[in-house]
Length: 109
Image 1 (tube, helix red, strand yellow):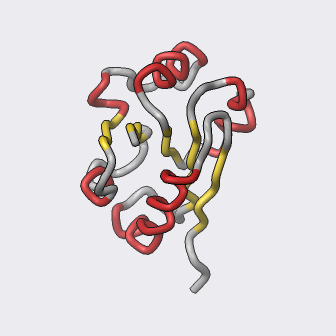
Image 2 (image 1 turned 60 degrees about the vertical axis):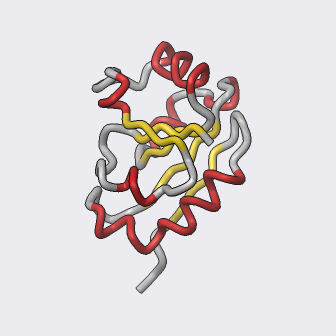
């Protein structure tokens, strides 16, 4: 899968998503935007967009994009907070369909 990581995610998460072609928003030069033009670009070049931004799916009709959305629900945007859910993220990335949103919650302590 071609995976795009939102700019608010730790860059080190990229190496944890083994088996996928992963880029960050910073690498593709689209920082500080999540408007429809950005998502139109993303759907042409990626299969899945991973973010922590729950407002994105609330504010936009993401079902119209040819892109799957995976929302990580973590306490903070540190790599340590993502480590417990890496396997679940990989599963969600493999399963999400275009126009679909899958949420990956942090396990309860």
